[in-house]
Length: 266
Image (tube, rainbow, N blue to C red; front, side):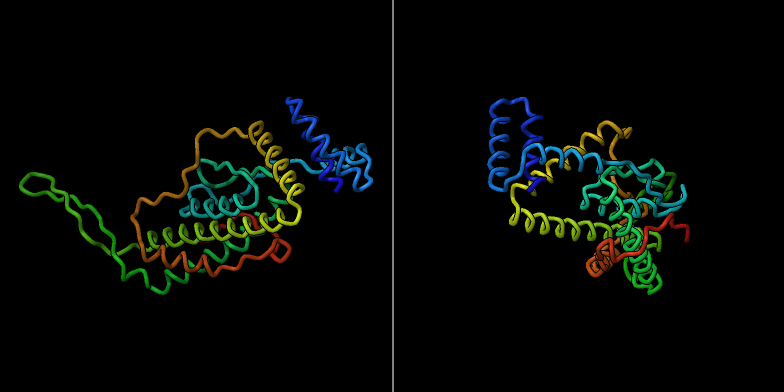
């Protein structure tokens, strides 16, 4: 209740619209009267909480620069971050991610990433070792010399292992992002149904604080466009990756091991 009243007071004091300020203040006073809470106490409570919890920037190591597959690792982290109110900038090399958010949210992202990255790599390794990808083909354009002329034609060739692995991991990360987004939407809906005003205010205040922090801190230029594979498309590998993403374990941060450092294996 202190948080709800304090949030209304904060809105009343920050708006330039006199009518809005009066409405927020009146709402705060009604809640305070019903719960016998002094407005000064509520204001002090919110100010104290804001001093304790502010957005931060953290560098998340992804892997060694130049290593293949880093973009799919980044895709996985960004998908997790999006569902946990964390914004990301990605280094040109995809070797690290700059995460912006509240410390507890970034901690949750790192814990989830540590678990899901292991699951993604193991699942893709198992898929490649099974040899199932070899049954699929991709269309490739080849150039041939004929009577002094260069003729290009489309041919079907077996899917390369690296192509299958990248497509598998891209689909896995995309499915994880979709699952986490659904979980987030369900949680927000449940919380809003119980404490509609308080939850809405808390989420909006959090978003405003994070947006302001990101704008004042980020030095990013351009937009990260996600993983790109120039080696072709494998529908079979993507279907397999999607299936693995559907069955991956999504634990809470308290159930997961501590966040890992960079992945250095092959």
